[in-house]
Amino acid sequence: MTPELTLYDLAGADASLRFSPHCWKTHMALAHKGLAANTVPWRFTEKEAIDFSGQKLVPVLVHGAHVVSDSWQIANYLEDTFPERPSLFGGASGRALSLFVNSWADTTLVPTLARLLLPSIHGLIHDKDREYFRATREKRFGKLEDLPAGYEDQIAALRAALLPLRQMLGKQPYLAGAEPAYADYAVFGMFMWARCTSALELLAEDDPVHAWRERLLDAHEGLARRAPTAQS
Amino acid sequence: MTPELTLYDLAGADASLRFSPHCWKTHMALAHKGLAANTVPWRFTEKEAIDFSGQKLVPVLVHGAHVVSDSWQIANYLEDTFPERPSLFGGASGRALSLFVNSWADTTLVPTLARLLLPSIHGLIHDKDREYFRATREKRFGKLEDLPAGYEDQIAALRAALLPLRQMLGKQPYLAGAEPAYADYAVFGMFMWARCTSALELLAEDDPVHAWRERLLDAHEGLARRAPTAQS
Image (cartoon, rainbow over all chains, first blue to last red; front, side):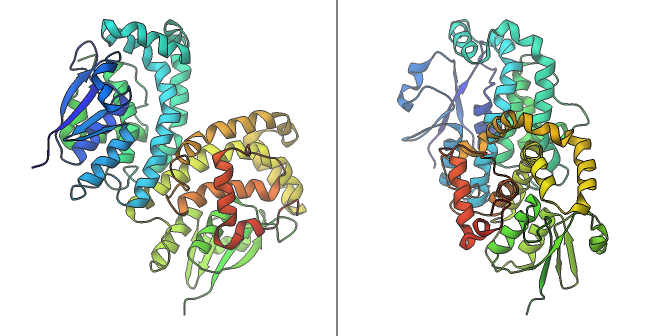
């Protein structure tokens, strides 16, 4: 028997609302491996609760004596610990190139999406998190109340940034090829961040990225589609 | 005996100047596979010379009865025709994800580099190509003579666009992992386009992308470093 898996997972005021893009990468990776984890709802300011991990951010995965933080490290841990289960990377080259896709999502999509989502997220998080959230986010992105004026531009910027994904989806259904794998989840996590926290429509209906997102919402028995959102 | 390989390769007025980013992807792919090709210098307006390929752009690879155009299709052809030689993709996932990297380079880096390189390229191409080159490029990028005023902004944009590559190079030496493969060549081809045609310094010396580019200049016995440039 493998020890239980426990995932510290960012939650809103409503503990069932799980919206971190990086935690969503891990949720999809666990589902891909056919693994179930107990999740612990965690709020931004509960730094002491994850002190044992030696850092201050989720996701944190606990597996017996192993504590792994950082979604990329967790994906690698799952791949190496459960090699007999469906591969997240499809070999060494796939792993190396998935890191590029992950870096692309984090550096290109996160800043644009943050400007679109932070105001609504501020309304969804626990009271005790609000001051911390505003202070840390406004340092980087400016006053939360000023962001909605830029939504139209940011949606256009997001759609432009997705061009490499859109272009490749003309040739294959997933980043990883015929079936989804971690590279897809690294990008899809961004869209779950948006879906869970905002009613903004980010993609045109005829965008191949929209169809790709639909396929991932249905993947692994609709895990992502079933997830609570702020609107549900 | 395998039939000879012939590559139609974009050339400048000086036939030894080979500067197409997409042809460079193919040069590196051939070297990776340990294959030598005869190259045929080709100018932009020599459309009839490649009519046999059913389209109007290089690279075109001829291998016995096989004619393959488009650098991505050529890479796939080489991988599938010479499977016993070093792999360009490292398996199905690596191939799928290399397509994303290729799309990223083509959609993100090409437009920025074009604005930096087109004026000098115009000075290096064959007389007979100049009118065609100016007309097709100005339709997309504006008057060639106006572009140099934007070089500083474009270099800043290029460096910003390279952030996902820069970030991942902190964790591994090549896009493809411990050794270079096609995903690296898909991006490196862009830098060869620049190296062969322009004296502009695009990367800061302490940029990890600079060090990666140096490693690729040295790869395959310095094939890329030895290539003639406009300055040499």
